[in-house]
Amino acid sequence: MSPSEETRAILEQLGVRSGGSLESRSPMDGSVIGSVTKTEDIPGACDRAKQAFLEWRTVPAPRRGELVRLLGEELRVAKEPLARLVTLECGKIVQEGIGEVQEMIDICDFAVGLSRQLYGLTIASERPNHRMIEQWHPLGPVAVITAFNFPVAVWAWNAALALVCGDPVIWKPSDKAPLCAEAVMAIARRALERFGDAPEGLLQCVQGGRDAGEALVADDRIALVSATGSTAMGRAIGPAVAKRFGRVLLELGGNNAAIVTPSADLDLASQAILFAAAGTAGQRCTTLRRLIVHESIADQLVARLKTLFSRIKVGDPREEGTLVGPLIDEAAFNSMREVLGDAIEQVDSASGGFYVRPAIVEVDAQKGPVLKETFAPILYVLRYSDLSEAIALNNAVSQGLSSSIFTNDLKDSERFLSARGSDCGIANVNIGPSGAEIGGAFGGEKETGGGRESGSDSWRAYMRRQTNTINYGSDLPLAQGIRFDVAP
Image (cartoon, rainbow, N blue to C red; front, side):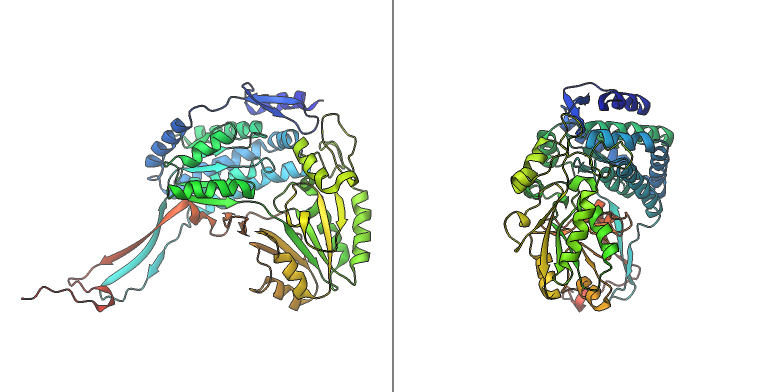
């Protein structure tokens, strides 16, 4: 079945109508697989979200969690067709499409528990008969801007937390994956119907290009802009939101490295490197792009990796055994070709699609293209002699998203995780830099943007903090012992 025929069947199964001026093309063969209507009235969506906030913020958090529980149930029912749509529209292999929808389900489960754990603090007061507390209140409408490479999971990371925190959500999906967004909204509407009394405008999706995102960013009714994408995008969004004193949660690019020490288990490291470098056709923000290997084992490891890379099945992501599907479009292919030139190995699969074999490039120094994030499956290999040198190489790029070390030496692993080790938001031991679980906070430092999504205490970004002091006595002592008495 062609991608367009299969997409039509899945959209019908999920209750999504195709039609409009914004076309979606499958990276599998470049064919148009559907279309959606561009959203013209962005201010209207913002106004509906603001009105919904006035009502939703008063709903008890555990009740808000019930909506997210229902959303998780609906996602379980729709898991297979939604995952298949991710494959068709974004080119992910079947296993990765299923894994992405599972992430959505996992974050819903996490958020349901969180709805009863939005804890504040009790703070000791220096004044007699006084009590201090810190509590968290809903923030306001949240705009979620997502990229093509995780077309549904990143929305769920944000939406599940925002909903239990009391915030409406407006989603601006990638214009390369509009059908996935429409499918998710159809699923969400079923959860809203079962919930029964959610305000209109609580969950919305606006379709369009850059102009739609810019309108959301500029609207002062949007309390938080959570944006996933390139560093260039973040440089535009950050100042625009700051100008109106809004909040941003930026999850931007990554130029991720893994260090392999002499004590490493090379069988384990090889398998981890394979997935981290080649998975999703190198189109994850956490893709492994730089491999920093001790000189004593470099030849052995590189030989293993070249053998593994040569055995990767590249092709139709729906087929059994395929590990690498197509790049998202011709622009991605051209970016890879700019780096590799004639060394790029294109794989014949389907006319109109851009299929490439993941590449291993050995380099003598970390400069030029090695310092840039090319969103394609290119793995640069560097050699080191001392762990301090390896950590310095790990940190010597402008991004700071994810990193890892392969070692059986406790001292090496602890040093890598210490304050003088990796400067990334994610630092792993004996696993690759990609494939994060939802329980931890996801995000990074430097040009990665500093934002955190998903687990841990990432929920605080969607709420506002309030400090309260309560005087339950009859006197009015001032802080710091200040006296302010009117003379008799």
